[in-house]
Length: 458
Image (cartoon, rainbow, N blue to C red; front, side, top):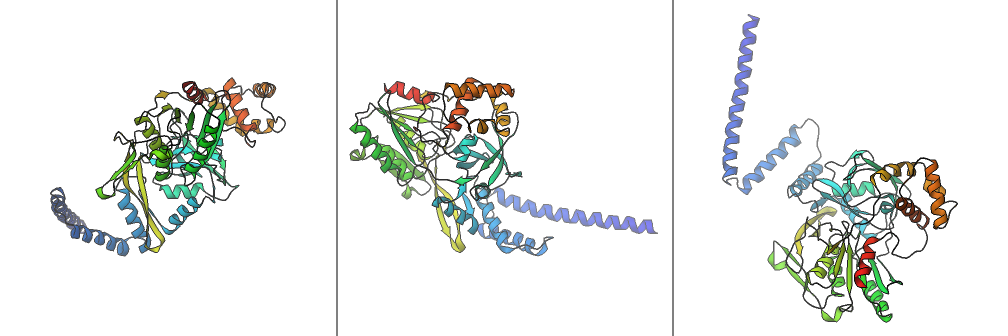
């Protein structure tokens, strides 16, 4: 008797399951048919969303907060655009952005983005903890403080990397060409960036300008440097945009105009044609319009750097030396919303004078010159050199960079069975000794890209 009841119960359960399945199948078929034919209207989609929201609020196993559900829905909406630069900012995240633009924060000094779904270093900024630690453009940040960055928003990542000056943050890096994960403990600092550095290279009488970011003051600072150069009858100018992650579109247009007399510098195009803009050169602003020019770029040159580079290259106004640029060619607008929230929305892409978009492509230099780099064998030893504090201990008693200190440093490394190439030993030692010394913004000993630029100008 019990067996019969069990069998009938099973039949009922199976029958019920089939019934539910058939009903679901029928409903799915209707929806699929509408979807494929574009038949789901916007009011129906709105009804569908609120149906899901109703069930989550009332039937989900744990109680939910309405604000978190709505914020999550908005983030999901923007994520469906598959654009890492378009994002929703909660009140806390919007406040973080405002703190960042004020420049008063403890950080590492890196520009980051999400590329192919992975948190990626666009460029470390010179003379910051990130640059000194050895982070490189293209590095994939896979963990922050041992927490995976998978599905982590850009704003959340920035918030985790920032903190009180003097505190340390641990990040895990996957780098192309490296077989193992690289781990960095980097001490945060107040990031104060000297936007423009300039000097005349005595051996060649060439004016050198290093621009680290495109800010409100960068154009005027470069103008002052050029005016000083012209008074000393220089042969030409090297504009160094390596490791420059970009900045203001207006500043990019103004800086390019210092060197270009006429024609289009950049154009921006978006969905609303009435908002498309064409930026053209004004001849009276081109105070260096006749001076020979070379621009230095690398894979850390992005956004506004690529606007200037593209304009100079397309107009054949100067030569471009280095390696291919990063390829960030979109324009974002930060739109404040109610309740102290905001969205950063990609509204346009920019195009070089020849009408080319470099987004996710980059700009190829006229002369490809790769910078000197450590060998794979040397890179494996760098961690031990850092962990054992060999370099920092050595420079406590050796304050000058010269042939004697180089020879003694090599001897110390040999004694510890950590011998490296002559270039690696010299580069690390010089960088450490000169870290807190006032020095020229250029270094002809190791900078093969700058040497090529001077060769072209001479």
